[in-house]
Image (tube, rainbow, N blue to C red; front, side, top):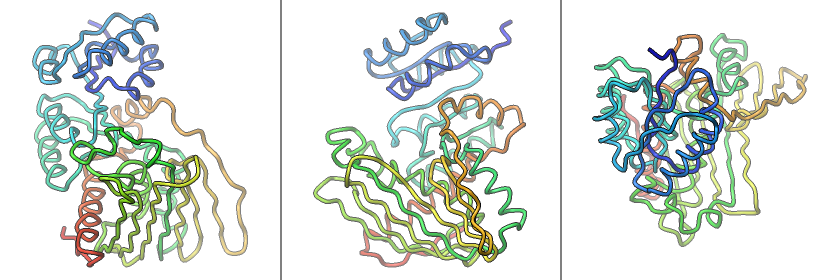
Length: 334
């Protein structure tokens, strides 16, 4: 019997093909099967695997066929499909008893998150959402130090993220609300929301939000004002149009320190009293499968757990509800 972990992929798009170039060469991984509705995408991912010297994986047009016909040949599944498909596919994977590495965001609504959590609890599988920030050593170190009390009490959070997203993704599925689940705030902005949810160490209590679609079918600009259940105040701004490029800045104001970090965990600055430490930089993860395997083995904290995904989903549902009511505050239960 092979000692390698047997991998199936649902969604053979560009992200999966990018990762496969390194995954197919990992000694811990064996590509077994993939599923995608596009024959072109399936062929591209198969070619990536064989070019790396790996055996040709089986291809399916329907992910349900992959799970039915290859269930006993698989250990883990990577899902990389449009956002609105995540809940159905992730829940099916969990119900099949397979560990899951899921592209961000986990799901699109609280109801979907709760169904996935129920499936995960019943099967006992490992589920990790693939946010680079959640797997970044700088973000994880910040979380550890904040939880230890080193920075003191969390007072406030200010976050912003911007990208020339509106023009970059003109005509792309990301701007089709029926499959994207949202616009810029739910796509690139999801990195900011997730890093805030992870480092805040608290659920949200109340949210007020505004959105502007700037002529698109999805939100391009979003402004959020919120309060955490631990009392800290939060402001988040997402601007999905502007000069070419993409960047984020998140500032955590504590009673003993100020921590500045970007949404992906690429850099961090810490100020304690009047002393500012030099900026620390870390390479944004190019192969998150190594982190997934460490979480699966129990040697790394699961910062992309279904419980964290539920916190994120509660925030996102509240943002949508408040924005639809022209900024009326929304209280979050739970």
